[in-house]
Length: 182
Image 1 (cartoon, one colour):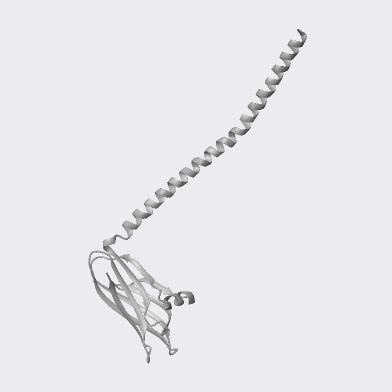
Image 2 (image 1 turned 180 degrees about the vertical axis):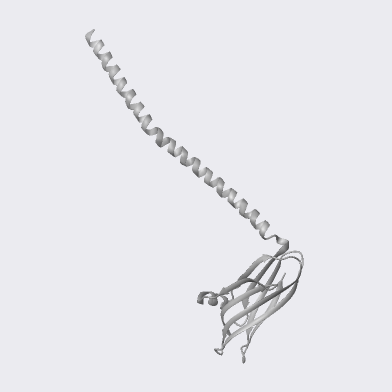
């Protein structure tokens, strides 16, 4: 009888230790489990915010640049070796809309046939004037500054204009021409 009571006390003691250890484990691991669940919720919320941000950006672009009033102006060089482009300024109906000072890398890109988007904006339908001011160094080492004016009629829909620069020998005078892309 003594042996059975001692064995029962020992089992109760061991069960108490095991229960205490299990309870301590649960208390200590609960914050870790809660933190990982919280991390998952934060990631889900972050993904949802990204989706909403993309939707808001798309709506913003639709409102700021509706397709039926859009105007885009692109720059290309026709005489790639004849002009060392320094800067371009663009004025729409007398208001400055774009200005760019070219780095060596950008000049090299244009000389290899690159196209630069100078301006994108909205424009009501009707008659308009686009003025450009070009500064460059010509192949005969003259520093030149040229202004050019292009008058056009904006119709419903997007309008894309290509502004081409060229300078031909022997005078290397820069000429600006405009072409409407279809």
